[in-house]
Length: 290
Image (cartoon, rainbow, N blue to C red; front, top):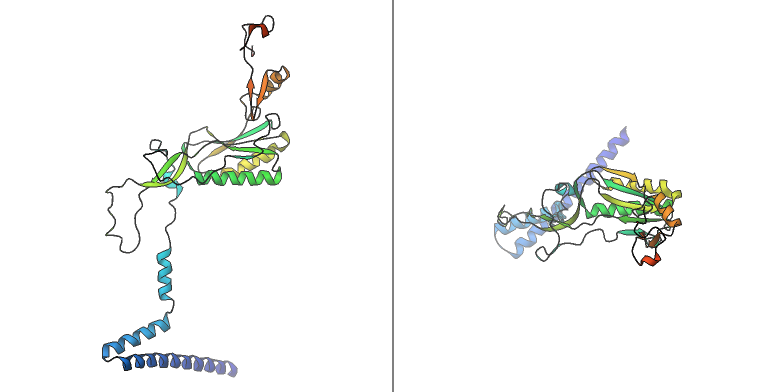
């Protein structure tokens, strides 16, 4: 065990020599200052400053970094409950920041109504406010899954709600010495902080239309997007044809009778308008759905 004691003695001697060098440096700095100026107080200040800079050289830089740290965004749970009137952006409500979500249609949005017959919805089951950040996160999650497993040309995703409601915040200063600047609840009407969508029970949040072969991928994509929203949501498979308001059976029936005209992602049903000469015999005053 003699080598362990020798190593301890060498380490202690090295630390002692280092401490003596630091002390000698501080004494030299104090002596140089005391030579230039006269007075006992100046000598004491010089020695204190030299020792403090040797002990904590990064103290000032740490304090500067703490001052530059900004406050985080207020959590969205503070604005979850709908308890005020709608407060949209207007000439009376100015300075509203742009919503996080800017794209509401993703995928093959120009595909015809006949291309994607299957449709599935993500429906809200609570009355609440949904922030624009949550809508953007859900859109990204759903789009990423569908593009990976179904293909970027095999679906059309649409965000069905828009964040028009403006959220306000009465920002309070929390830095040092802010007590003189705060006024408490005097003039507490806050400034715009962000936007959200006012969602009701049974309102559709996201909709995906695709082919029947990719129906399971669409349902899984909406299940993953559901984790980006607060509250409770349900995934409901639609009985309609795509984004139209017609059921599958009616759509196929009227299409075979040439009573439906494609209109982009939707379709129009031909009614009993026009000249009587163009009507079929015996159906002059009957609706086309009869």
